[in-house]
Length: 539
Image (tube, rainbow, N blue to C red; front, top):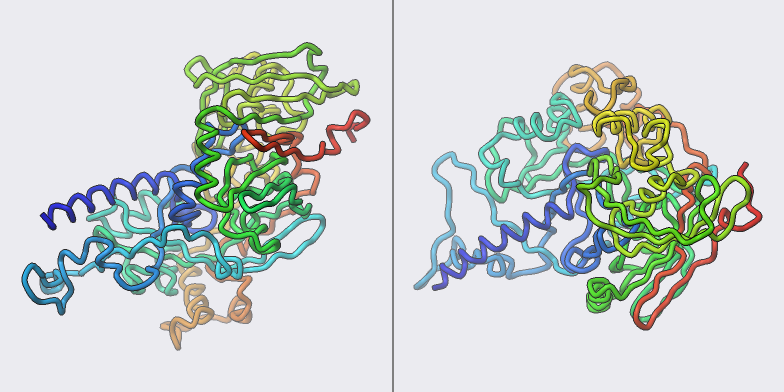
């Protein structure tokens, strides 16, 4: 009976973890490094982020593909019993019904049991202390920092070597880089340094990779608190700041800024806004409040109102658009009107017209990704400075009426090439390392180094990290060796070798703003943005 319960726990546990991994983690080899970052855990996963793109008309659904889940360190004793390992007993256990802990055959690698998740734990002081902000040229910037990506072995990796996994799934870096990272002590398997990438992975293997992270800048505009009580926190989110960690963003997110600068921690996002969308954003302070408001979402008791500035003279009468929307690419984050898409509905009402552009009120009655932006593009009045849906990549008509004289592959290629030339791939939640010949024909000059150079830099990284006392080979003096104490640089980091031009603050603003969020017993509004005033004129 006890063994049967344990087996059921194991089966159900793996099913849950696989679903969480698809929702909360990101593939290795993203811009931050070759392993996945945990976004939220426990109650945060179950409640705080339950409001997905379909619950919010302009929710920025994750377009980076699946992610991997971290199971954090145990909170205290009793971990093995909580996981069902107690049914097997420990090495020193004795007595009826107890079994000795399984040990592998001679020479077989034994994997320790998985560690217990700490339910309800969000971001805390140890996370906020990873790095610091500084402000320059109207931008909020994050100082580069070292970060551990963590994940348990996925089922499809079992029986394959690390070398095979890196070469087939995580090709953001070259194999020479991963070999250099292992020599530098940056890769760990079950908290033991990985020295040989030919090691074969087993179920429950725990992988950790230390990487050097560079975050894109965001606007220096502060996050204003609109309301706060014992249940919720409501803010006016500036454009360009993501709600929570995703892609290359971690500290430059609303969640981290509120925690670090306003001491507002353990927050549960109740809905999401696109990174470039500004306006009303609500957080619950407890899981109970989060669940209550999500019940209102499921019962369609919430009303959302946006305001935007669009090209041309929008019709003065109310316009309702019911065109279905299809996701072209989850990775790039692009949608279009298509008969095969999901049904949706948006109601538009013009508020003003200045002779060149119109201010339009938008009420999404459904919640598809980029719904407002795609419907406005279809109507021939795209948002004035929308970097995706008001692009020449869509063709001469820019998608009006659903007319796109390109295949989806050609459209994605042209969009990526346009933003690559502008050094604005972050708009597409991409970076250079995400690109492949299938996405663009004109690659930027590579910052990758030869295998010999990486070997030399690996030794420099060892010195920086204090992994070894002496280098295993002689090296010529490099500039990186003279800066081993500076944690803002890393000899193995390709991003450290790139020179990127900062965006202008005005380039980080898109003219779409969440003006009002209303539900049973509450209604929160934000001030009208400057670009929505009647007397505003384009530069």
